[in-house]
Amino acid sequence: MLPRTHTLDVALGNRSYPIVISHGLLKQAGEHILQAIRQPRVIIVTDSNGSQHHLQALKASLDSAAV
Image (cartoon, rainbow, N blue to C red; front, side):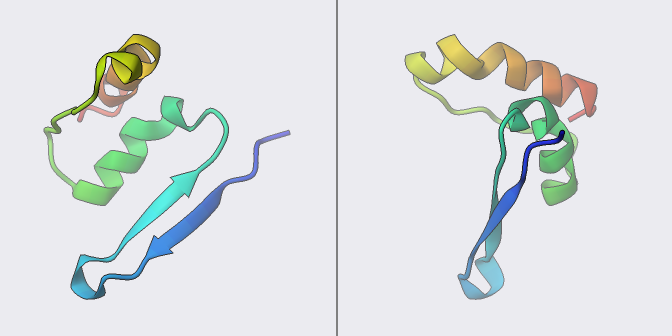
């Protein structure tokens, strides 16, 4: 069974954006980011805790989506 996905909309007029919440979402992050920004590059900003636990998976997801 696939995990449920929740989307929260941050209403800021022309600067509005969605926040997507789901178990295992990091594996799909590249596709979500590519759809949201439609750019071939991103910059990852993290601290040592985030990078230690999630950076490799995020990089792999971005590479897979050609971001």
